[in-house]
Length: 238
Image 1 (cartoon, rainbow, N blue to C red):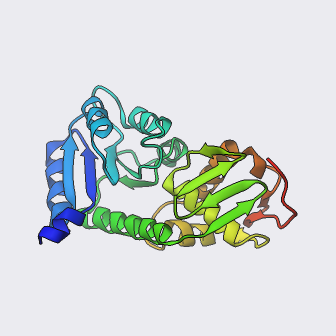
Image 2 (cartoon, rainbow, N blue to C red):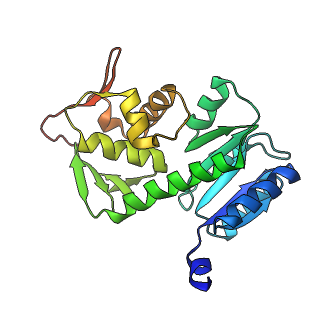
């Protein structure tokens, strides 16, 4: 038990509703996770700046500072740019999901939810993270270097901060150059079979990759009515 506690993943919940915080803490602690929480965005950011966490469960509608702004601040800091974020919100419209994904959330769960669903999604995310960390491969394409071991992407010596999902998506494109990848394939392989989002999620993340890595703009192409393809062409400096 002591060893398990020492190796437990640390999850930080930022949620203003005490009943929901308590419910999530109960289920996550029962699974062996170390759990801490805050009731608003300001307090949450203070803790994140002082402590290291493995994942953030972030409510969208928060007092003081809403979840979108908290997410933007987390993503803008080099120290926390890669920190996995799962958003929780009572808003179910697709537009709200897209906003959350566009600013860097890795997953999105709509209230009301089953706490077991939240646990399952977190476990799936951690499994994919561990799988990524286990690799020691280095991929290079158009001057972009993807280092799986260090979970780092660089171009001409400059490191680019990608979210966990953006990194995994880029890795999948690199490993499948020249292949047309439908949005459904990408959702299944990158987000996992247990992801409940829409194919629009893929479009949002591809757009973010192109924005952060302009070298991809001419080579990561959309295939009308299908999905995307990373072209197989000779390397070119970005």
